[in-house]
Amino acid sequence: MPPIESSPGSAEEPDARFPYGNLLRSLTAAISADPGLRATAAVLHQLVDGNDGLLTRLAELFDTAADQARAHDKDDGDDDAFYLAKDLAEAAAQVRRLGEDLHVAPERMASLPPSRHHPPLDFSLPPVPTAPPPGRTP
Image 1: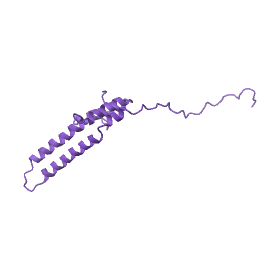
Image 2: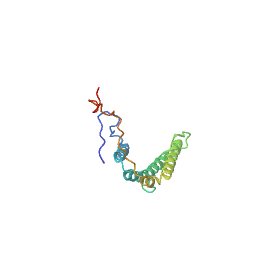
Image 3: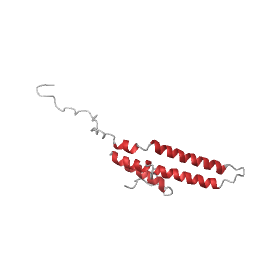
Image 4: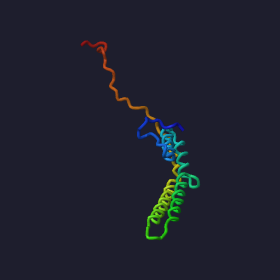
């Protein structure tokens, strides 16, 4: 996968503090650079696979974070840990639903017909004649 090219200080420059986001940015750039559907279908498969896909693992991460928050809920009237655990568990459920909704996206992407590449339209004006046509006088 080619590295992301950008000028220093641009909005497109990867931030080293976010390697996971940068990985997804690289995947997006890779499928943008490849006009074929197979590369896009392959990346989608990596994202939505129900066993080992990124969305499955992300849901697991949210569940684990929810468990951590629950472990700090002391039932002392401060409901912050309780509500944080609830929010994280709901995020996990939403991510799982998203994966379920998109589970056939890779196959659907791969089955799309190839795009029709049309040559660009030529909007230039025809050349201006420099001499009158033969047989005519000005």
